[in-house]
Length: 626
Image: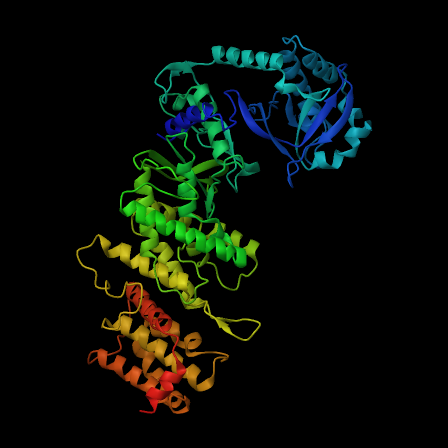
């Protein structure tokens, strides 16, 4: 199903005039340097290729040889410096390493190019015959970039300014070589097309998934007897034609590349790609804009980012309303209607770190009508709705923002935080995205991780001396609410339904919720008595224990509160609020233990009460004097 969907999309892209996609037998490759040759095969210069800030240019080149084992397998008309020049592309390799690879490259390329009647082919053949790896570094142009060659990089050929693999005659002989290869290949029924075709013995490597070995890994591979059946080895175990294998490899490279205007979404270590059974690129564009707005990736927002966030929030509100009314979508400037029944695909890929980083793991693959995906994403945002503490906080909480709350607050460096996210929460990222796109409950492991961070983190004080809510913040509280909503949505009863609201529910009497609200008022009393800049608040010292085992902590907090009420300017008002909450509890007000779900309700009660009303102190003082 995955390969068939990818190959079908490859056929769509081949017909799309707006997209430059490699033909069968070719792939998009990063080329770092060009060897510019004269018609006589003399090396005139080495030209570094750049594209913006990157030290390479993405170009269409003959497909990469599948390398395994000890025998070197060269590419056609491009490769690293060990193959093209005989200069090892890795430090510490001896001269024999490069010489052996150059000889394989020379024989392979001369064999194919000798069939082409063109000056370009003859020039490259002349260079390969004359070039001596032992004296390569004596050439001034090569010596100038020798250190860069040792750091890796791909080289290609130009003849008098024309790229060798763009010459029509060279392309002809390369494609004839592919046909000859196919004729020698084993023919079987292709599992994708259903036709008898030459079968790919090995499948292409896919580039672009972070964390894979040398940025490349295979989606389909077999290298052990236990993975084979009926005596069939490697690709013959699950036969796919060479054309299909090449096509799905090309389209995966495209979807994971910078060429794709709808970039992959990275959640943990997973790269999430998406496409539609349609040449209309507004489908993936609309999906990208609602599932993971770019502004949500920034740790801090400047003024422009804030404007972008508010604009994106309005766009997503429009999307939600239109979906509910069955109207056409209008996302990111899309003015014409999109068919909600168009088939849409979402694929999550990650490196297989447990066994081999040269293989890919499929975290999930979903295929549904486009409208269903949009409804489920908007349901995620609906479930996560919660009163914000201030207007700068995002109204729509992306999956990445949720995952970042699993990172200890002590890890401040952005790069370190990203590495921690990939290494520690890689599986949870894929599970969270799958829950969002299928409408299933969120992963229990993620809920436990959020609760764990609430237990261990403490609030921080900024440079101005003001405390920043880290322990219990907007995103954490929103996820707790959403998690419990989804967990009990499909069950007959939801004991916590009245707590799982966007804002405070003053009439809800569940002990966990009331105790959370009570803790918020006790904390407020302490700050009113001692000031805002307290070294350690009761939340820092007692919140974890109060949340898990209220009976052991609340008697202590209530004794402390009497001193706070006496010192606070509007202590009588605060005392009345605390007494009102105590009255809502039953004869045994403080449970000995709270379950993990009840701890979440406790956190929600605390957050709802804290965010409900910052408080007009003048009004409270007036009330306290009545």
